[in-house]
Amino acid sequence: MGFNVDASGISQNIKRMIDMFEKIEWEEVFDAWKKVCNELWNGGAFSELMNPPKAQQVLIPMTEGLTKQGIYIKGYNWLPQKDLDKHIEYVVNKPDEWLLFGSSGSSKGTIQTAEYLCEAKDSEAVSAVWIYACLTELHRRMPDEWRGEVYRILSKIERAANEYLFKDNIRWHHAMRDLIPHRILSCEFLSSFKPTSVKAMLELCAVICKTLLGTYKIIHYDTDRAGGKSKGLIAVDQTGSIQYKEMTKELEDD
Image (cartoon, rainbow, N blue to C red; front, side):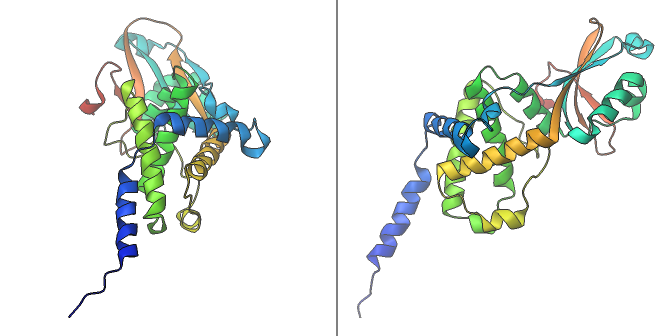
């Protein structure tokens, strides 16, 4: 009794396995990203993704309470554009109340992303942060329809960006669940859209990042007097109260 072997099916499976393990070099990803940012929507509209975003500076008055504790506040945060003025007014006028009972509204991962974006050394570094943060979020909530070819493309780009960032010691702690502050696109939309090329995946990433910059503002807190022990506003706990983390500690201490 003989067996019919579908050679074409076997060859396709082998091809998919080889394709899965083939790398995309970061240089190829960055070149494609530059084209996307410079050419999408007739060029120029997405070019800001190639430069570190300019954070809104928020100068916090040095109060008696802060002075007694010997600390000053320094750190980043994301805020919806619509809440920006109200939040700044509250922080500046009632800093002690904000520190005791307020909330940053952001997770540790998103604040880490804000810091990396604003302090990126050049356009290549800021591009890698955008790409990695965005694709990691997409990866974590990837729809079933993306399994297969879309997943392979996403993983290769994500891996290339991560390898580039790792060389500069830019990384997020594994416990940081959210790397961007808002889910721009619904799972229903993602399920119906399948970016099966590097360019298509990067275009999706650019649209998400551009939308974030249009709806959120990165702010940078700092007190108006140096001295004392510097502490960074990193995140909120489960009750919404502000937590502090020494800027010199490793993220693994969280």
